[in-house]
Length: 566
Image (tube, rainbow, N blue to C red; front, side, top):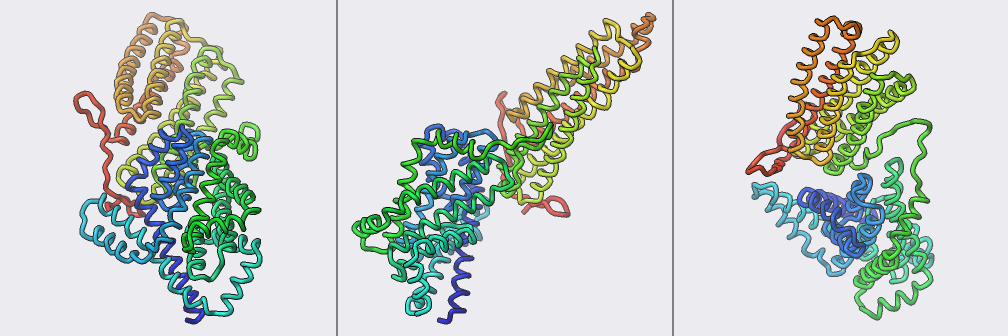
């Protein structure tokens, strides 16, 4: 076989391996992604269980990268702590070793039947659930089919003097072996691919066990280095997770380096099968570093917070806290991040709303300036969140994800409009009242206070409903808003009655008073819109006074012509 043909076959086999891992991961995320995230959220408080869960998730996804993406999202959203994340990462490293064991078992020989079974399920099944199972099987089969192609290609190369010389040079230079493996892993973004090639070289007796161990060390460092580079520019939590992965690997390799020769001898005594020797090295290495580090994850978390500190924002600069572009390809996580960011916006809106009544009563220019800045912050965060959601809509979403994303777009808009009403209407009226040296009557203040308290109550219910995804809170918000509509009518009639009595303060502030009451009414309408968007977003139905969420499962795609069912 010529070098040109061998290179093409290896590239093709590598492509099948990487594509198989991709569709395997995608299929599993569609089948169980939400359940796995819920499991990670609830079962990671115990570090041993967290480590086992990390191993299980990675075995299923055949990718520690997929596990890390989920962890970054949950950590960035403050759903799980960094300490819990570290235990899962250690487990994920153990999970990656299962692929090596499967290669040693020569499961590559049944890769084509697995692809055939998966394709049959996809073509003859009508339900999406079964089609996704077929997708997982195809991905699994293609992964090992790619390895088989590379194995068949490498076998004739064992007699090629040039190839043997190149491998011999790497065997004589442990540092070069580690660097080559690390760089290759970084380039293909998959330690499984690199480890698969190392095992094939060993199983073809092209390299000895010791050089294979050094290459395995390089592959372990390379996959962690990939995560660090991909986290640059993302959230601090994302960078800490990636840095933790790198530190675990580097420290583990440094601990093992002095003992490579006795380590190799131990593996050779356990089994004479060269494939299992390499697989066992990879498994033993990751299990040992996991057991060494898991008791100290709390201390390690504190160290990471020192190594990767929070960003110091200049002056009063405000930036989105939770939006992470790297999560856009995982819609569930991206929606979670956007939801968290909108809660951040709602906090600013709540602060503005609470602060406006004191200004209506007694104007303070410094406090007014703070509200102006708060509105600028809301505009900035709303623009960033809306842009993020727009990018999310360009991804392949199912119907439930599409509805939730569109609901969030509407909710962001209404929170931003509330900020505008406060700044352009209520704040300007407070300033006008101060400049013209006017004052409301005692009854007028009472009316405005009554309306203000009702708006604060509605705002609290809406924010709670949004934070907890509660349809019951949303329904309650609609009822409160109807009460506010009635209240606005009664307060307007009360104001007109005072004017008819000729109250001087009422006459002087009539337009300001009525505009303030009307502005509060407009705020209530935007809050009602948020409540309505929330009920639409989670598809609420009611049965025997119990709340049932019924998210659809059909796949939808958004393109330039709108939305179409797939």
